[in-house]
Image (tube, rainbow over all chains, first blue to last red; front, side):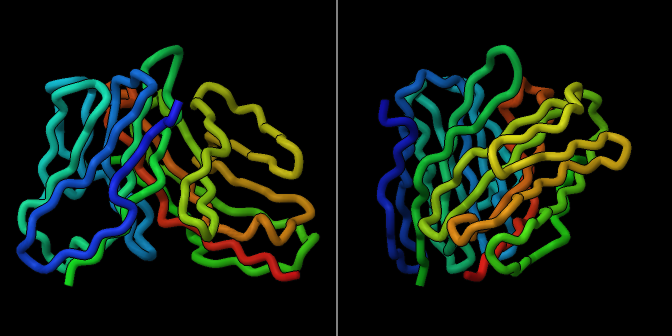
Length: 114
Length: 117
């Protein structure tokens, strides 16, 4: 199992550009989520999904779109990049079972918006 | 609303000292889950422990131990005989499984632990 994979690892964008951060998991997990990590802020939830076709907003959703067409993939779209979106982005997956739920994190994508 | 507070922004100790990282949480749910993660300088997030609200037993794993006290809403993490490799940012996190735990974790802001040789 590759676990949770994220591409790219690094990205530089100019203000106003759009892009998609890719996230995939091969563990057949139902739940997937996106976080951003900013210095001194911990990780904050952007969007999450409880299954294919179902997504919802987290704490900081503005400026981001998600969709979940398959169980494996959960891409994060930046519609019009802004310098405030400079951050490290982590994708995570987890499953329902006998309790909750370790979140398996990807390695992160470091995004810089100039 | 749920909240996790890690009041210690940075701790610096000399190798072999014991160190405790504090975590205080707020939740209205009676069922919830607490986590600790380690983020070394390489940047990945490493899962350390999960504890549910019904299990107040303290846990020890090698040099690591966790003290969960519902009465004070705290879930503190102690490293005994610290080593340079323990240098990292440590995050405490909370999950309320209203949606089966699917709606993510609430993280504290992290404690940067520096172990000096």
